[in-house]
Each structure stands twice: as C-alpha cells, then as structure tokens.
Amino acid sequence: MQSLDSLVAEVARTDIPVLLVGESGTGKEVYARLIHQLSGLSEAALKKVSCAALDAGRLLAEVREEFLSERGSGKAVARTVYLDGVHELDAACQRVLLSLLPDGEPRGRTGKTVSRFISSTSHNLEKEIEAGRFRRGLYFRISGVILRLPPLRERKEDIPGLLEYFVAKHSNELKKNIPELNSDARELLVSYDWPGNIRELENVARKIVAVGDPTLALGDLRATLASVRITDESIHKSSLKVAARAASRRAERELILKALEQTHWNRKRAARDLQISYKSLLNKIKQIGVGVRGSEEL
Image (cartoon, rainbow, N blue to C red; front, side, top):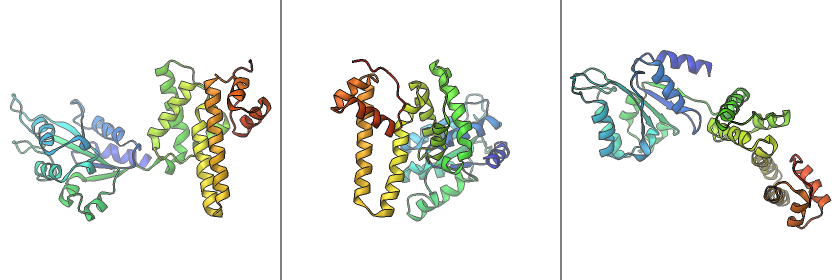
C-alpha cells in the first residue's frame, strides 16, 4: 500500500488517464478522490459518473457537454471525471466515450487538454476484451496508468488500524462511547477474509458502535467464519453428518440469539419461549460464545 500511495502521488501531478482495478469495497473511489485532490484540477469539483446508469445519450450530456465544451469566457472548463464501474458501459456508450477520447485524452475545441479521466472497474478488462464485451481501443485510452488495489484479505496487517479509525469515526457520528474490543474479538476480525473488503469492515465497525457490545455485534461474523471452517472440514471429510451437524448448530445459534434479543436478554423468558430449561439455555449460551448479560427476572 505504501508503494501504491507513492505511485499515486506521482501520477496525480500528471494528466494521464488512470484505471483503478480492484474488488468491490477496496477503496477505488477513495483513491480517485485522492488523485483529484493531489492534482492541478483540485479547485474544481470531481464529477462522479456511474457507468451502470448511463446510456449513450446521457454519456454525451454528462461528459461531452459538461466537460469538453467551452464556456462563455471562451476558456475550456477543466475537471476530473470519475467513471465508476467502466465495465458496465454498453457497446454504444463505449463507442461514444472512445469518440470523445481521440488521442487517449479528453480535449476541448482549442485542442488543449481540459479534463482528466479516472476510471474504475472490479472486472478483468483483458478478459472482457477477449469475450468481446469491451473495446480494446477504449481500454488502452483509459489505462494510461493502471493502479491495482489489493483486497483486504491480502493486507490483514492493516485491519487493526482501519478498525480503530472506523470505530472512532462512527463513535463520533453516533455520539456513543468507543466500545472496548477484547483479544478474541480482534483475533476474529483479523482471521476473517472480508469478501466485502474495506466497505464490509466499516459496516462491522459501525455495527459494533451502534450495538455497544462487540460480542453481540460480531455474532453474525463469528457464525459465518465458523460456517466456512466447518464447510471446509465437511468437504475434506466428505461427510453428510458433519455438514448436517454444522447446519443444526447454526440454526440453533440463530434461534437463541433471536429469542434473547426479543426478550431483551431476559434468559428465563427466552428459555420459556424456546421451550427448554433455563439451565440448558445457559449452557448453550456458553457453547455459542455469547457473553451473558441482561436480566434473569421472570
């Protein structure tokens, strides 16, 4: 990430088109805004264009008219245009965009470069080209520099710092105290693979702050991780019994948590709702790793 940040600092000073490649949630828009802020176009607002919502006519309106035309002063308006999800462009939109970038850079009628394009994708555009879904010429014109953002599972050493930042951010926004995470919770967060990447981590941090109890807030994450491990084990052992037991444990855990939440953690009432003894419920709470709290009153 340090190498990536150094490269961003150098690229931002140029007007070379940049292509940001990374899985969903890896921070592509964050980097697009960082490049814009470090560039010579930072005084004008960055314009984000969602490619999934575009048709050819709107692309002309959003890009050509807004960013490539001369205004009343006779001077072209320079902006940074961020094309979010460029792989979503249909064939017509790709053709229009290619016509607006004849030399690989957007130009006004004066022939002088007036805008800078930053594009992002979560797809492998080389494979999209091979499949005939993306124009090769457009790919080369938007990818003057390609910056690849690694998924969070490949940079787990950054999880503690990111978590601390997001917890502090949402504690301030929600006006709540910062919850204390024990070593088990931190180990859980680092061991998880984060398919939703940084966006998913931020959502979990917000949930921890909102709930106020990290153990309860991380219940779903713990169950997911356990499910993945058990699934791997069942595949390895090729045992239907193992898979059935795993599914049963997950269902039981969800029912217990639901009953506890509905009774505001009154364990005697939850036991009655679940039609098990109070002692059995306490044992099961320990087994699923949920901290005991709330009331025992009838």
